[in-house]
Structures are given as structure tokens and as C-alpha cells.
Image 1 (cartoon, rainbow, N blue to C red):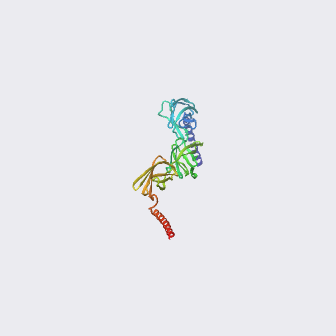
Image 2 (image 1 turned 180 degrees about the vertical axis):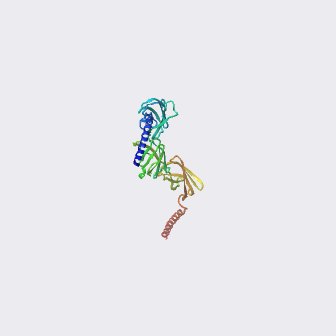
Image 3 (image 1 turned 90 degrees about the vertical axis):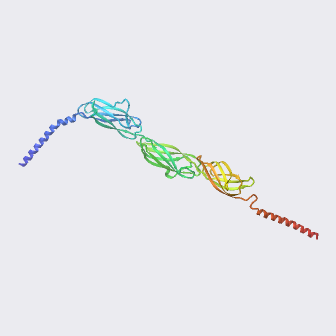
Length: 393
């Protein structure tokens, strides 16, 4: 009995379910067969789009329903980095689109020259013609790929002045002014001069990825030979990196490394010239740069003794200054000159003078010689007179 009841209830439920399906079927058929228009991208030319250039996109207004779509308007809503070219129509009215069919529309867009690499959306609105306030919105993706462009923004050195015999850091600021990332950036510094040499591995630097509008400071280490002259030496930095599509890009930058050197004036010796009545002071430039327009002033006991001029004195060279003769006293020799950077410099050295008058010492030696001569001469004449007396006896 119970089984019969259960079977009866199942039959009732099955009947209700079948009736529901039959009742809903017309409504579902109406929904599935009505027109449904959407927008999809069918092509992009060129691919990828390039910053600052034109790109043509073709979209399909697709009717995915089973009924004909009548009186539809497609409106493009461009946004950065795209602008619609003059003469292009913002809206396109479509009279009809057959079921399961599409309608092609082409647009020409200008890409902003500053657009960086990336995927950007272009928006579209679909609405019944003349009823723009009620719409469906769709977006399509347009890919833009920019090229990196590395430049040198600034160069500094540590120390600020490059001198012969020194080791220095060359700090180079690179900037990517392009609109694509520079990846796996490798930088190498070389000089054609034998006087400028990279120190160990600091001739090469790996800078990684430099994004658009990003700056990066790379440090190179160089040694400057002690025999280097005062001038600007040519060098170059070679860059190698990959652009957005993985292709290798190489670029070479020419730079100049100014070696200025320094000046150090020293007194080598001082001696009197009794014949000319002058004091000769020999000075040397023990620095690494040439000193020009040298003006030397000798002061002794607070009194200016004299001034001498020299047009120039090269590094590791010496010259002789002449002043009125002074035999003793304390003072200084000051030297003003033009340095390698056309700047005025001055140096001062202490001077201590202690020379004997002409003839030597305080006269004691001369007196001794005179006494000896007198004694010898006197003895000579005395001995002769004595011999004469003996002969007369």
C-alpha cells in the first residue's frame, strides 16, 4: 500500500515538472531568438601600434541572436592615448544585421607620441538609433609598443678634478626618453688612450631594466696614468639592451674626460751672484700641470726686495728667478700664476737667507793668509841679511 502511494506522488511531481517546462519554453525561445548586438575587435594594423603614428582598427558589430537587429547605432568613445582622426565618424548607424551575422566598421586612430608600451582599451556604445541615453558598452584592446631611447643626461667624477696618477669614479646618468622599456642594459666604458684604463670590472656595468622616463646612474672606475698630459681624453660608452620585442639594440656615446692636473711650486736652491749683485732662486713645478703667467715676489724682513716674471713653467720643470742681492734675513717667496682651469692661484714659501760677503766669511781667513805671507816674506829677507853679515866677517 505504501509503495503505491510513493509511486503516485512521484508521478504527480513528474507531471508538474513537465508542465512547467512546456509553459516556460515559449518564453525561453523568445529570449534566445531575440537580437543581441555586441562589438569585438577583428583586426589591428599595424600590430603593434606605434606611438606617434596611425593605427587602423576594424571591429565587428555582431548579432548573436536569432532575430534580425534593426536600427542600431555604434558609437566609438576614444580615450588616451588614442584620438579619432578628423573626418572619421564617431557614430555609425546600421539599418539591419541579419541573425548570427556581423557588420564591419573601420576606424583610423592617432596614437599619442608619449604613449608607453601597453594594452589600451577603446570603448564603444551600442544603442537603438536615436536613443543614445540607453546603451550597452563594450571595449576592445589595442596593443601599443614603444621603442626605448637611452641618452646620457649628466656626467660627474669623483674626485671632481681628474689628475694624472689618480683613480677616479666616472658617474654617468642615463635616461630612457623613449616610450618602451630598455631591458638587460649592459654598459661598457673604453678609451682609445693608453693613459685612461678601466679598473678591474668597473669598465662594465649591468644596469638591468630602465623604464620609460626613468633615470639610472652607473659608476665606472678608471685609472689615469701619471704620465698623462693636461687635456681632454676621448672615451666612449657602449650600450647594449633589448627592446620590447626582445631584439638587441646597440648604441655608442662619445664622451670626454678632462685631465687637468695640479701645480706645486717648490724652492730647489738659493745662491748669491756677487758679480751681478743678484740673488738667484731656483724653483721647480713638481705638479702635473703647467703654470702660466708666473709673478714671483721676494720679501725679506717685511720689505719687498723685488719682483720677477716667467711666462710659464711646465710640470716637472724648473727655472731660476733673480732678485736684488740680499745676504741675510727671514722672509717669503710668493708666487701667483694661472692654473690649468684658467683660474688664479698663489703659493708662498718661507725663505731664510744667510750668505757670507764677497771674499768669504768675517775676514779671519784672509787675515791668516796675510799673516802667513808676511811671516814668510819677513823670514826670507831676514835670512838674506844674516847671510850677508857672515860673509862680511
